[in-house]
Length: 322
Image (cartoon, rainbow, N blue to C red; front, side, top):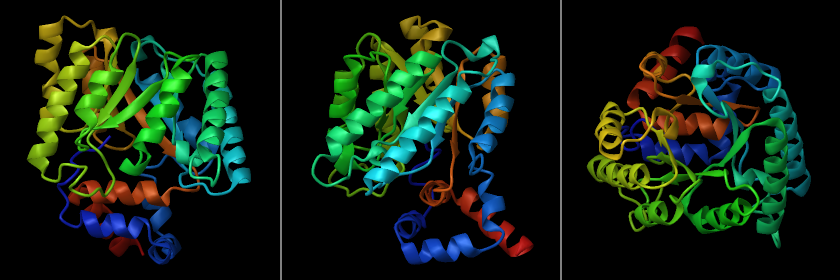
């Protein structure tokens, strides 16, 4: 869910820093950093997340909560993340919700790399088994699950696992990134009846051979993919903060006759809150992606990379409060 994937000229450098242990140590040691991170991350604990979620649900918005973590290379850590998701799902299942939030207002987002996808040997099977456990818990507590997208090297594995899981959990959602050249075909393949597809622009540093690089090309791809999903038989999840992409939904609704409960808008926690509320007020379903957890660094850096305004906010806050 990205506001503008290529609008920050410093994006390549920031995304490189997101993978740098040395830069991570430097950034996370700045005392003011964690307080600034709270603009984009609900907190580090489950309690923090539930506080933010309760406010959003009371406002008529739905949520998709992400326990932050990726690139897990330890089997024990992967199991710990599954336990954290089970605790999260149980807590979400106990919350009251505003009827305006729509059907299945509580959801979790899961990165398969956090569940062990990158483990040597049988990492893909481990991630599949762990994801199945998370989906079963969600079904028990009336929640839903969406599998997040990561960099393009994991796309085939991720979509293979999603297809396998949909045999038992046909409501399972997945994320497609419009800046990847393959995504139009993936939209056609995955947008059948009952499917749930979150369409975003993309947030990773990808080579030109697999991804569109200019903003115009990414926007054009997003529009084409959005048209495929809105004309398809599934449930499109329009994940964007871009006013032009949000406006593009209206003519597609008019063309297809889609009911208000047959699609939704999605936005990130802490970004365009006024627009989120406006959409709810005009009868649209809005879901907010709520990340939390101690492993916030990679997520935070990708948010800085998306927009110059995010980076300016961080630097200004650091200079004025450190």
